[in-house]
Amino acid sequence: MIVNLLIKMKKLLYISGILTFFVLMSFMYVDFFSSMTKVDYIDGSKTLKFTTKMNTNHISDAIKINPNTAGFEAEVKKYVNNNFDVYINGSPKTITFTGSQVSGETVWVYFETGGVSDISTMKIKNTILLSSFPKQFNIVSVSYKGSQKVMNFQRGKEVNEVSF
Image (cartoon, rainbow, N blue to C red; front, side, top):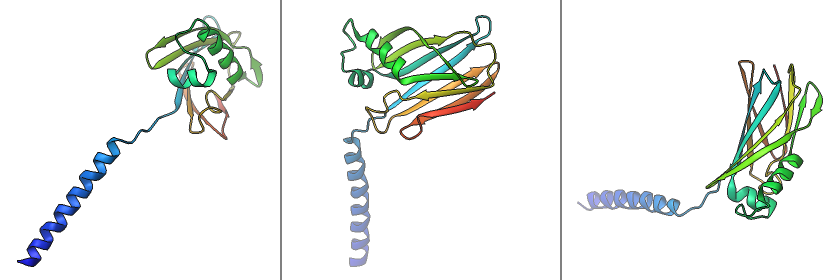
């Protein structure tokens, strides 16, 4: 009888321990730091179009400006120009900022580079938010003439290259 009671108490303690663990985990705050960039090649205009999605609070913290102010887009443009470089077949390309859009917790940034007739290699240096957030992870997905390549960037791996 005492053995059965001890077994039941052990099960009760085990179950209450698990429940306590889950309750405590629900109070933990985990922030995920990432950006995603989609690159599309437009054959007719020989242009690479870039669309970057990032967290509004994170970019706002990095450039130290409120996203609801008039100067936000200009600062985002400057930030992207300083933190994103593209090399096609070993040659640097100039990126042209075409706009941005704040949509709640997300900022969409649009830019492009022209004069791209053929790509054998594409090298990208992507340091977006890496200096502000040590655990930042950036993903770039490239679509070129039916081929899809994915590059990952983080601290210590700011440059990546793919071949087509």
